[in-house]
Each structure stands twice: as C-alpha cells, then as structure tokens.
Image 1 (spheres, rainbow, N blue to C red):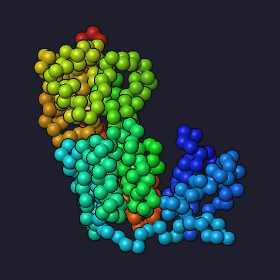
Image 2 (image 1 turned 45 degrees about the vertical axis):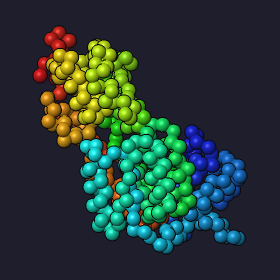
Image 3 (image 1 turned 180 degrees about the vertical axis):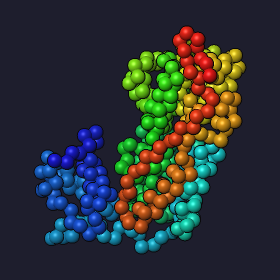
Image 4 (image 1 turned 90 degrees about the vertical axis):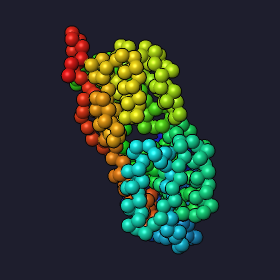
Length: 370
C-alpha cells in the first residue's frame, strides 16, 4: 500500500503523491485519475480529504474534471501565449559562485530563445516578495529561484502558490522551501559535510570544530553531515567548538572584534570544517592575527572551490561547487516543465574534492605535521 508523508496534512500529502506520480510518468496527460473512492481506500483517508487534494490540483491546472466521466490529467496545461521571458531570482550577484550559475542559466535560455529578467534578494525575504510580485504582474513563462533564508519558515509561500494557480512553473537552485512541493537543483551538502569531516578524521584529527551558516538549509545540511561523520567515526562532538552565523553577521564574527572569543571556542580543536571558502579565508586571517598557523596549528577544509581558495596561504583544501552545471540544469528543467506542463524531478549534484595544503596529518605525540 502506498504511504503518504505523515509530516504534512493529509490532503497536501495526497496532492504531492499525485504530482509525483505524474512526474514519474505513472500518470500521463490525458489519463484518467484513480477514482475518489479507490484513493480514499488505498490511503485510509476520507473522501472529503481526497476531494480537497483533487481540488488543489484542479486549481493548479494539473487535473481537470469531466462531468459524468471522471477526473483526468490535464492534456493542455501549457499557456497558449508565451512571453519568452524567464525570471531569475538569486541571493547575490557578485559572490564567487553566482557569475558561473548565471552563465549556465543564460547559455540554456538563449539557446531556446528566452530572455532573462534577473533580480537579486541579498538573502532578504522582503526583496524576494518584491521580485515575485513584480514577475507575477509583468508575466513570465517560468522562474528560476534561489531560496531566501531557506532554513527558516518563508512568508512568501503564498506567492509561489499563486504561481501554481497561474500555471507558471518554477525551479529552485542551491536551496528550496521544504514546505513547498517543487523541482530543485542542489548540491549534496550533507554528503559534502560528511566527506569534509572524514578528511580531517583520516588525517588523525579527533577534536574537530565547525563554522556553519544558520539561516540557509545548506548550512544545516553540511552540519548534519559533519555530526554524522563524527558519530560514525567515534569522535567527540564539542558543541562549544561549533560556531553559527546568519546572513550579515559573518564579517562582524571574523573581522577582529571577536578574535579572542573565536580562538577560545576553537582552542581544543586541531581541525575545522568551514561552511565555505569565504569563511575559511576569513578564519585564516583571524588565526594569523592571533599568531596561529594553518595547517601547523589548525587544519582547515572548506566548500565551494572559489577562485580565491587556491590563492590562499596555504591554498585551501575544498570541495568544488558545480555552479555552471547547477545553472544549466535548473534552466533545462524549467524549459522542460514549460513544454510539458509537468513538474520535473529534483536533482542533487556531487561536489568533487580539490586537495591542497590546508590539512596536516595530526599525531597526538608530535602535533600536526605536513
């Protein structure tokens, strides 16, 4: 018997199940949907719950009722008039991974005859509100969006639901909203956090700290991989050695005002997993101000493989963000959704290791050594 997601209301879980069945090709356009009675029996729910789920999908244009015949997968959900414009919403335009993401998006959209309307949120929800409202008013064929503060409840979900009602497809990249059934293209952040921690463990480090971003899901996922590897390898989790920061707080945390506090929090550590290369390089500068050396006193591993990471002293061991591929894949998924009227399946991309010189082998007797 198929199971519904118990963490969401039953009618929403059934709606998502039907969407996924369509995305997986179990139901195709023009197919007749399983009857309300059968769905109610299969999932042990009331017919009223089934009707509510079907009503939601009707509003979105995914299903259509035919009087006296039943409910069908909508055979023509695509709008008859296209604007040939795609809205692209990103958090930052000048941060190191985003030029390549935009490049990947633009390559695909240009090849398919679309123009791009670009907006930047600076990871602030009020800017996301403004951009979504503007795109809804102007009219676009689809939207590629990087979620804003994706670890927190988002007040703009009603605008994404309005996009559903208007049959405007959207694809998230890097982060997405868990409360919203959607297509997304992300990196394997949990797996990368795990592998980054594993590198330090294999180099002999047992006291490992971390610096993670608190308001984006990537930070939570990378932390989840971090603690999973510590648990599996038998290393101790020192919560005092895990630092969290939110958007806008990184500069103040690592710019000099809190050097003594950061050093105190990390004093037992021989290695640190950094949320990204920006964090790692700021931490390097902090350590240098305090007379500490990388990797002799503290080994570092980070994520993203920004261009600046190989220019660090020493060059950073990091995991590469497939930024251009993320942009291309998000654009390809969106174009397919525009053409078919169906939500596409999500994509999770690997982040390859780039080994450099910021990790030293640790010996309990002799300390770190190259």
